[in-house]
Image 1 (tube, rainbow, N blue to C red):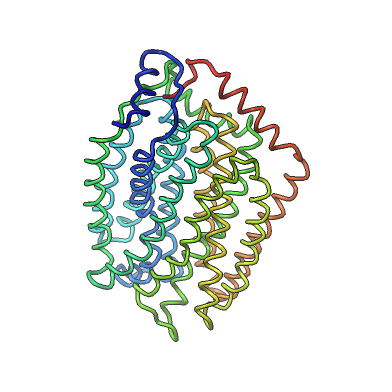
Image 2 (image 1 turned 180 degrees about the vertical axis):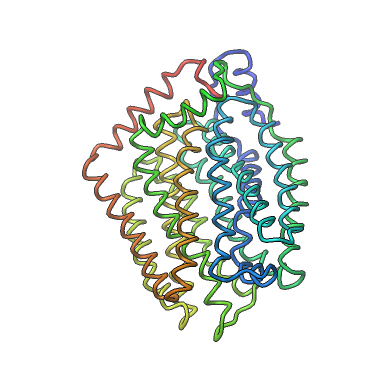
Length: 431
């Protein structure tokens, strides 16, 4: 057990306020690796949609529902599972989710019917919310001055997991078929469960216990009482709708003639998104310096512009790569900034805040996936690119409106942090 995490745990267990010196590098690395493996399960399907459609006899216009089903499960998990991080022992909760994820992944690989596949994908999404519990845990252990950096470090693991998911799933599918991807992931989840059981510290739950229904009810109250959550949540819905529109539908023109790329080649495009991992690490540091609004505006501008080169995907793969780099960088920079700001708004409700925020993410991802595959089936890739650009421009407009209406949001965040963070009583501490 890391020394700093252990001392924080012991002080909390004795009923004393937790004054953690910060998140240790070793524990941050473990959180990042776990998040990478868990989030990969959500994105494995994107390069495999064409193979899944052929294997199960599903129309290409309908196969995007696989991604939507996963996001529906994710949304349900955000509402019903993530808030438990503010109530129960986090280690036990994390281990339970990881083990059940292994079972759900095996069910996906074994599915022979369309409805069986969709049901298993819902379960995969439901259990993948362990990522958000780990992000909230990192924010709790970190000191206020390093919170953005800690969130950025763990989120960079999430981004790398997404990139590796697209590449490795395509590579494995070319060698052994799409089902092997999920069987192998099931085995990896069992392995990481053993590491987590050995390494993650046992932490005390909150001193003041609410009922489960009361906890869920308080999550919905956050939507009403926290303007930062509403504003940043709406941005999350829009940026991830654009993100999902690209990555869900991109496989369709790339796998069709005249390009007819292999699963491995399509998966390689995910590596272009390594800029997203760099953005995740840097954006957290920028947010710690009070530059969150500026980073958001610049990133949303880049997101909107990224769709211009993406629109040439069918004629220029280099243009597509450039567009993907811009899009991934922009989305992850806004995402990390969003999380840093909402954590600062309510340090006493980390798990509920991230659960509420990620509901917007899940809804946006589901809508983007379903809309993009339908638009592609009707009007082709140029229409998908136009759809993505309109969504991104809408996000930029929303940011401009909120920035004008709340010019002193940075100072208000600092004030709220002091009120809810350093002034909170032990009864409100999670760890």
